[in-house]
Image (cartoon, rainbow, N blue to C red; front, side, top):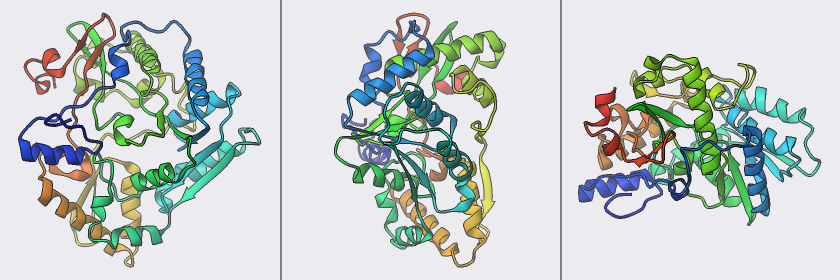
Length: 368
């Protein structure tokens, strides 16, 4: 939100800020305000997940699970299958750049082939091609077709997902396996919160998408308490005393605490939290925060016949920053995502909901 207006695309909110000078706010999910986030649901984690899956099934004409092969979507898929809840379709998206499609080819598709799915369930692998990239980036105004406005990527991730949502049958619910909780320990209390650049519901405004975890307050409360309990029993207090300390906790702990994994098996793929750099064919430095994005760009740059795509991509980014500025991007670079906007902070120890200004009156940076 900005200047009393709601936007589905953060870039539009940034433009409104530039025009009005008013701050940008994250419109927190209303369901969370009316839920007792400080109380851990008594049901087991598996029971909470099964309830969520049945809720989605009962409210949908068709259910289509977006499956990447990662641990989040795997748990969604396993919940439906283990509880004999019908899945109409499962969709995997290949970006058309082999260097970034290994998780689909080597994990997702093989897993689906041995899962023993209901005969009524259709598996659909959407594959983009280099011709799609040629068509997209040959348009000098390609960036105007970007719809998310949070993390800008060369890969056609956002457009591919929106293509699925827009072309699906009426009544289809697309189920996505996001998002794990983000916690902070402040004033001897635990809080969960969202950043707009992290939480999945703010990455698509399509009405036919359902976010399995963060889209339901009960599910998110359960996993938040599970993670809190795990951190308290596993790590020393100084490891979660500030947001920057928590960000340094190995992802294995977060995934284990949230109930995603019991071991670091085939579905645990560590994600980079570092800024990755590579040079394009002209010696310009490109910085990204995704290993898949890095491998994709690296692959394109090895083929001289495709480097013009990088030129067109970079030109679109430059045109965009000349229009909206760079202050709302991490290190002034749209490829590193936007600076996060906070949701409310939901206390896990008492019935308390605070804004970032109330919890950090001296400013968030004072906690780093």
